[in-house]
Every structure is written in C-alpha cells, then in structure tokens.
Length: 292
Image 1: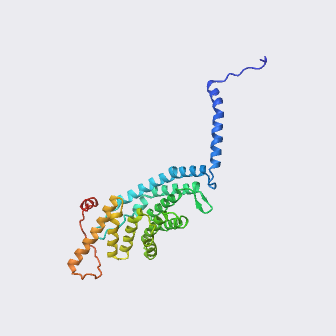
Image 2: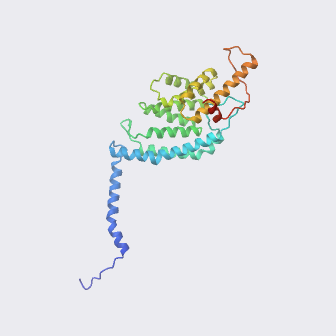
Image 3: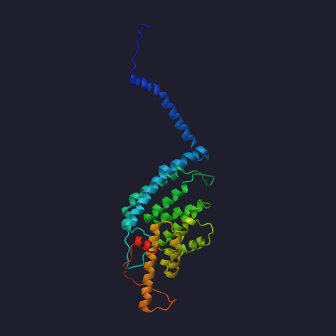
C-alpha cells in the first residue's frame, strides 16, 4: 500500500447499502420497463393485464364501496308516505342527496381516474373489461346526486360506445330512471318500447325492466298497467328486500283501489282517480313472509 494512502473504514450499515444499491437499481429499471410496456395504446397481454387489475381493484372496487354506502344511507333515510301511493324506487330528496355528496363524489373521482389512466380505447374498441362498469358507476353516482343531466350523458355514452355489450341495456334502464326523475316521461316511452321488443335483454335485468316500466306507468297514471308490470317483476326480482318492497307497494296500491271502488261504487273499466288516503300496511319483511 502506498504510504500516503489511508484506508477508509466503511461502517457495516454503509456496506449493506452499497451491496443492495444495485438491487434497487435493477428493480427500478424493471418497474420502468413494465410501465413503458403497459401503454394504454398498446393492445398487448401485459397492458391488458396491468390495466384490468389496476382499474378493477384500485379504482372500481372502492368506487362501488362509496356508491353502495351512499345508496344505503339514501334508502335508510327514506320514509314511506302512506297518504300517497308508495313509489317503486327509493330515491333521495335534495337534503338527503347533499348529505351523501362525499360518498358519491368519491365514487365519481375514483371512476374518472380509472377511465383516464386505464382505459384502452384502441381503434374505437375498448380493451379494458372494467371500463364499462366504471362508466355505469359514474352515471349512477351522478344520478343519486340528483344531477340527472350528467347521468344521462354518461348512460348515453355507454349505449353508443358499448353497443355490442349487454351493459347497454342496463344503461337504457338508468336513462329511463333519470328521465322519469326529470319528469320527461315523453322521452322514456320510446326507450321502453325498444326494450320491450329486445330479445337479447339479459335475464338478470328482467326484474329491473318491469320495475322501471311500472314506475313509468305510475307516473303517466296508467295504474292497471303499473299493477301488471309489478306482478311480472315479483318472480324475476332476485333480491328479497326488493321483492318485499315491490309487494308492499303493490298491496298499498291494490288496497286503495278496492276501498275506492267499494266506497264510490265505481263501474268496472271506469278510470280510477285515487285520492290521498292513509293506510297502515305491514312492513316489507312481514309482507314477504305473507306471500311465501
């Protein structure tokens, strides 16, 4: 050793850092190459796998958690008014909607990020299997915020872009809901007629279709058709709670109609105008047990 060169002592900690530095460099390089190969404009297995996994579990999952939380709060806050015919769906009034803005805004933020950073729209075709679901969650979040115009814009986009995907039928049904809430029932009729003659309507949506149809008939005062639609909705509605709610509504409607006929001796086939009455109906879960 040269007499003027002093050997520098290296601490064990620094020695460990010097040893693992190349490992970190290799990992960083691998991660950089992985990201560069996962372009949203490259339809490769690596790109699809990365954007599908990230878009589903990092974005859509938590967006749906927030949306479901908001919907639960809305339905819990809803109080049935037995002086009127019970509504088919439980929607938020302006006060309840504002109270749940944080949940719906979070869902909107999550889905927007997924669409922005993980959509793989290449040559007019989407290659990320979860993007359509993100759009549906986005539209529903706007809907429950009572921002019906924004919701319709989203659902119309789904119908146009995913024309070969069954999700378009679900988007049609939510468009009808939004138009109904905007009192634009004149725009819902053609959509419902289209779905009525659609042979490819998914079976899982039959209950939703009949419920939405009943809501439309109710708003247009076609009470007999509303009753028929609800009767068709009962056997194809999958969720028991929804079945109970639907039956509760149906029994409320039919009971008021029978009492009105009895009190006023109405001739069969004559139009019925149901005034405000108050009835004590059994809760939904009891109604469900009663019809088993």
